[in-house]
Image 1 (cartoon, rainbow, N blue to C red):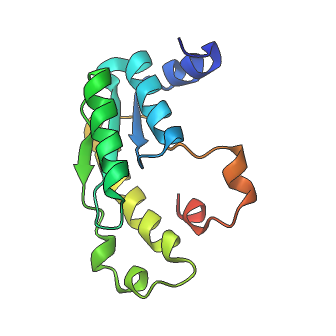
Image 2: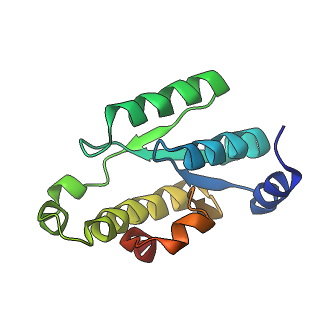
Length: 133
């Protein structure tokens, strides 16, 4: 059972694209969105050599166990020289590409919101990717 607050928030969106990284937070959000919104939840994973194989496997297994599909996209960070230079803000470049792809998917699906597993603890860390999001 999900906390009522999560269900209420997700239901209020009506539809939602969920950025699924393979971490616990984004997977929980994807499952919650599926339980609450059903076919109006659109989980999306940016498949990449930069994503650990265990994370990708966790995404596939969770989706299979919960009965939903995860759309995999290539956000193109491995073709972005700014990302490949591996600067301290590389996550900014990766997330910029990811969210550009997610905006297109949200428009295509008619989804009202793009959500990620970002939580309060993340806000206290240096996270250049959050600026892009």
